[in-house]
Image 1 (cartoon, rainbow, N blue to C red):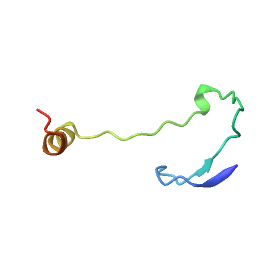
Image 2: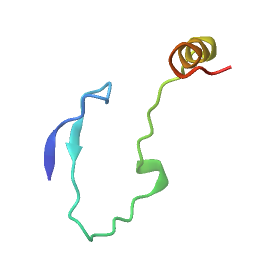
Image 3: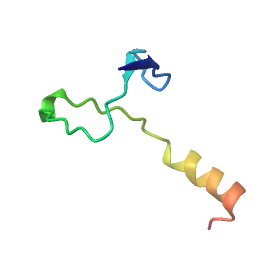
Image 4: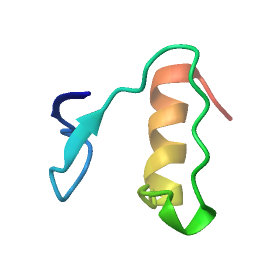
Amino acid sequence: MVTGVDSADRLRRPRQLSTAGSVLDVPEEGIRREGAILAREAVAARLRAEQSWT
């Protein structure tokens, strides 16, 4: 079931919702993994400012 467009997906592919209780057998090469690389110092600065991180 398509539930809309995934705003976190840079290619704006449709978001899929599987039926509860079902088991999907998906080959590893068929799994999409996307993420972002964060600048280490930017993350550290924000943690220091907002979480009293040292």
